[in-house]
Figure 1 (cartoon, rainbow, N blue to C red):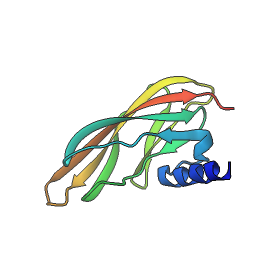
Figure 2: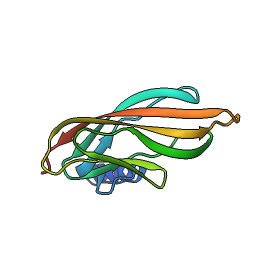
Figure 3: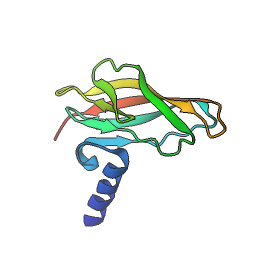
Figure 4: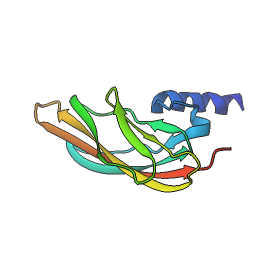
Length: 125
């Protein structure tokens, strides 16, 4: 059990979740090729909590991160170049939002990586 809780804490640190990952947030890794890419991944968030995404694996210099498609139910935003999703309290069901990392790739060319997150909001325990 301690090993599972340690793994959850490591996951929380990686995802930047505002509450423990074993209780609030789980997201699949997303993969992309090139500096102009669109991809998607899944995210599970407990109702009333938030989930943050990091910038691991992006080569180049970021100039901005922006929400390009707002969620229909929850809220999304960017703080310190990190996008986040906040699930509406009491809601359970699907939602989605899209964010983009914009900047210059490692060769000096334009970079825009768009990531769509398909979200499942689950009830709090």
